[in-house]
Length: 199
Image (tube, rainbow, N blue to C red):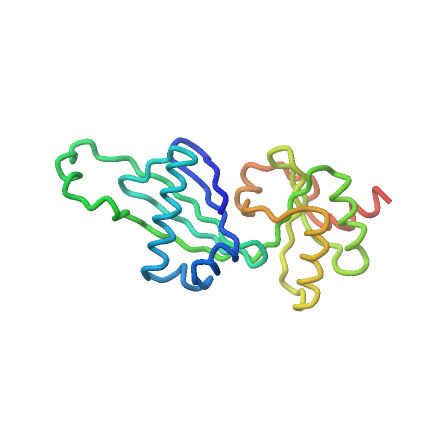
């Protein structure tokens, strides 16, 4: 379980499928109101407080993004506390989080690379064999390749992930974040462009 602060009232938590399996939680369980998921959420909030000093009191908006290859991303935003209701706060059970949960499924396969050479190496391996597609972004000083797996059969999908994992690492960033905060370097056919231009 990895977490990072996105702002004063916002954190991002990256859960791998191993994190879920260790706790006996299936991916589909994240959509359900069950004790195991509540325990996981309490654990995440404790860790967020210990690691980041993020205080999860008050109303929280929770967005859960499922990414097939990488795991799940949970974005927690703390709502503004109504200061007039301090008297009521003491009556609240500390373990209860007032959560508004939104769930989104992101099918995108997203990998980051420390330097451009690694991205080029991955592109050369993929080009002509698995895919010519992909988009390339620059985000937080890293090169990021993003693929839409639609149209890939299962074997191609796993092969694509295997190649990307060899050169880079899965990242918890979502396509929406890349579009909004990243810089688009190659908008389409990134594998083809990289392989041809740096051949």
